[in-house]
Length: 265
Length: 332
Image (cartoon, rainbow over the protein chains, first blue to last red):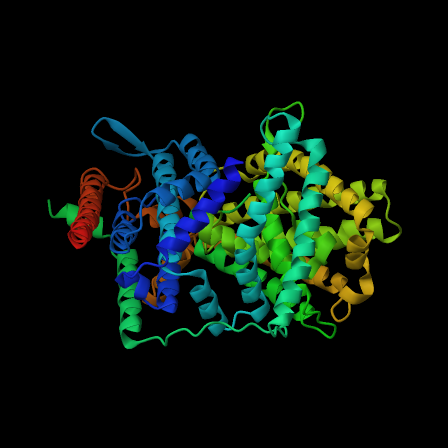
């Protein structure tokens, strides 16, 4: 199934990207987490008709992706996923708010157009910020950091285990799907009436696998606790980088750089 | 049904994150209680991966030509119990957010609530368990699954409507938005409910002990009663509903509001709708009653945006070009 193999590929790509050695990769996970959260919060806090003030915010993903050598293809794929619901909201604004705010030459610009574009740009910026985070930080480091931030142990362990077993179960599902396709004479997807036994079988296989995983973990001394790998300490350099980037984000949120620049002309 | 960051305001995102964190915290507390079963941890991990894989498998819906997939909340709750199911779904949602941009980092709270809490902590104890508690048969399983999946999805879709409206990013009126979302999710819920029922019937035929374990009330309800949790959520929902909508209507933008509070300006308190719009848009372009054209604000904004984008894009391109050259130099 194209869906399953594309998903696997996505995981592999991101995992490989996260193993890079650029300056952004070396930045402490806590610093990156703080920057990403501050950035996303700043982006979504812009009023719904903001456009010019949002433009300078694009510097972070544009420069960050270049510095961390993150390719653009995964970003485009991610955007395609986010777009439907965002498009519905954006386009309904375009249709419903027809009050003309100003004219660009002969072109009337409505409030709806501004808010529609604004929503799309916000989607682009927030999606790329999360991609930048996960393309430069391995999930294990993020989870260790979350654990240090006192996120419940069970949830962190849950994250790691689920992540580890996704590839195993996707392979299992793909095998079952191929077998189904061979027996059912092709066609797209699975017939709805076969879905019960199909998913049920997958669930039982997962359940049994969980049993075996538990036994294997027990053999290796598992006692219900999660031992995370050691994270390096947050250095002064990391803290300074995070503070200056968060400061820059706050500054761009408060000052409309585009307008200031444009007025020079 | 994933909420995106772009459709949220920081206030709504923050409030929902707090609510979901409370629900997750409660689940952790329940799980680590007296009869903590360490075996449950790997079970939850693998079942989370199962739901992830299950969501990838599309089935064809007869007579429509379209396809659907399961959400998995009720299925997980039926196998693991409501609290472990919520934790498992939360982990799946976090992974989807990070690796697939399905929902955003700030929208995580909304998504965990809409898809996890609504089905595992509200629909499951309200409908699924009461129906199956008095006896398990194929008919009861089907009724319980369809009803609880439909309720969970309806609640979730309604929350999406409320969250988007409270964030103030849409011009859609409440009635039209709800009339658009609820019927679509009713249809999705019916189909998903039937598939969930088919899976659970299959489990009942092959491994009946899997279902009965989670229905056994004694083990799961030791400690906190579900009824209390439900009442707490209902109260919270009403309080938040009133609070958020009032907050959203008087302060369209949280950060701007806090800045104004800091600087002592009380401009936003006028509450006049037109003025609010003007306030919230001051930094972009002037609305018709301002002298937008004469002071050249839109044109300046446009030129400035193009300049900043060109500068950032150019710098990014230059960095990539230099790196590429360096890499090819290294290879030679």
